[in-house]
Length: 78
Image (tube, rainbow, N blue to C red; front, side, top):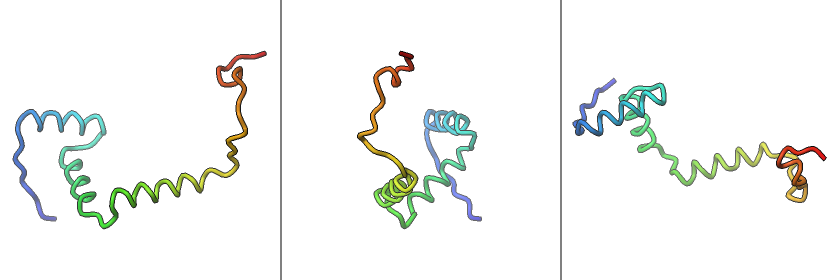
């Protein structure tokens, strides 16, 4: 696998390390994921559109007219 050397400022590097740690990852993994997304044939719009369809397919028995009472929304018993 080819390696890439990238130069960034110290502040950016430190902040990237913090983000990577918060995500349980490494700076290299963050950069790799960014580059993979950058060259992906699927546009951001198409990806979001696909994810929306996946979510919509999981919603089976939903009706906007099925409203909860105010008591139910706030966890109050009558």
